[in-house]
Length: 238
Image 1: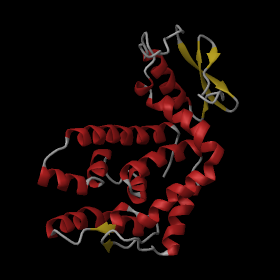
Image 2: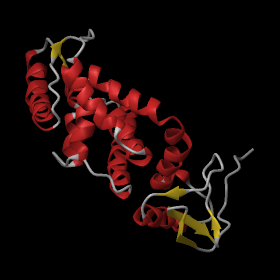
Image 3: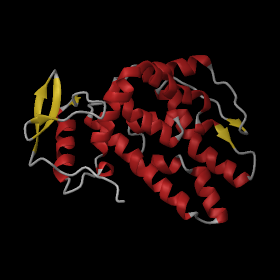
Image 4: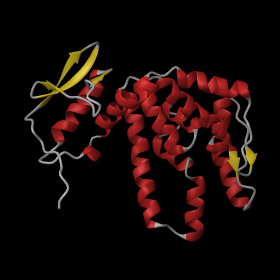
């Protein structure tokens, strides 16, 4: 039996102001989230991007081709109802940041990590007021409480839509610092993604590329880039 798929039922999608924000209407009817909340977003640019995704659908609706719509749904249905908990979870990455856990061997890998990650930690100390310390090995080593507070305050200051984007930037890279670096345009997104993949790149060079792992990494990279676009559309500022 073939799986049922939702089909296009509307002729046109347009943007309208609603409840202090902006919504998308399909043939005049407002779009709702999966939880049946009105899809009201903070900026006209985001609403226009969502409308373009709906307009681009052909006979069968493909949610995978609608990253802005999916992220807006997540902001309204998942993040906003538990915003403090989400912010706390994301801020927790600071105490176990990818950039702080270094290999003790081989020496070449340790050197690559230091060359790639030390400048990011220096930037966080200088521009974010948070000095995180690298350690050797994988055992957890608590970071300075004042540094963690400085990072946490920034995370908790985000509203639901920017927090949704930031969640993906941090969780996909494994680094709170890289997430902030993306918001501040410290490097282009391709460079930041590469910096988050130092260990994986090393393994590939030693043992070859695993096709399944490479496909998963490519999807994550695409989602990482999409999260930065969503942050911009939400009107986010560092």
